[in-house]
Length: 195
Image (tube, rainbow, N blue to C red; front, side, top):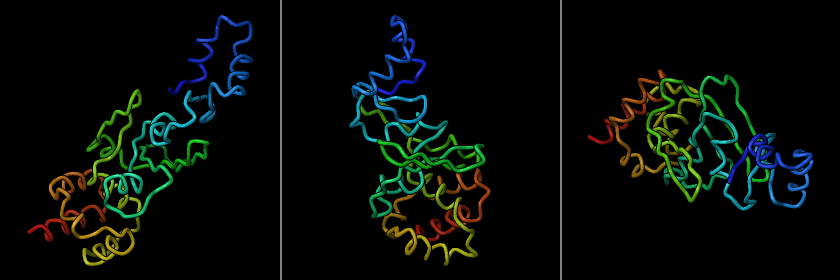
């Protein structure tokens, strides 16, 4: 279970020196520091379950979500997350894994997310369409849909059969919130492909 320093100091308030007690408990392996001010009780917990607590508000997206949904063939080891209005990319290297956080437009942020529960943990992850829009938003604008199709197939290695499973209307709705050339072109491309 994830806990903040304040939560733990409150729990240990009956001790003469709660900070020293916490320090000893970390050395004994009862708590594992994730980042400054954040601890986990289970050293084997998968990193993606902690992503939203490390830096937020955020949700899992980009390459990690594309891999999770089976859109890209590669396994992704860095847990990639979307934030908004943070103005700069953040990276955390922890004993639970590597985490990166980058902005998307605030109008798009709350849309098309799935809340997943695993045991006592909850995490938010972008739906397929949203993860792809997030990824394309961060890439250089492409001049036309033909080049976008090449980029999707060769750079991101997304199979045409996977693109055909995406909801073109959802992508069109999302693309209005990004105000991004790439997401608009994706909506056009999907509509053409699915005719």
